[in-house]
Length: 190
Image (cartoon, rainbow, N blue to C red; front, side, top):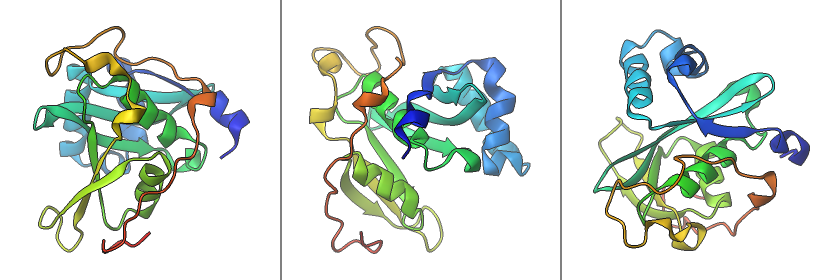
């Protein structure tokens, strides 16, 4: 990752005017999938979307919801193909960590999505389980953000209660590679 390029990336809360850009960078929505486009619209209406941008425009987006056993769940992280390998996904996940109002943020990805697995491992997210049957022949790997990476903002608060701004900007210096957790025994390997 190029630190100079990463330092120009800013993460902010998305708003309704971002919808066309989000649909354009989401491969499924851009291919005409109305269900995904409606999901993006719903996430925007709920205030669940963070966008990563640089002077050229929006590079990616992440969605944080509280629908997984009342814990934070990163439903989606999407980065424009031209912006990959520049730290955009890392910055989006760091923004989720900084804004999550529950003690256990989770996410998941398909076994076939090796880039996302690598990103989660580099950021120190721990494997938390494997579920078969969501996508045909492509099990879902679940990950948990380690508590030591979270701010103590959720202590004493009920689920969904927020303190301070929903999403803050993160300095590039906050990113650092983390020890890769073991995935031995998982079909994806490491």
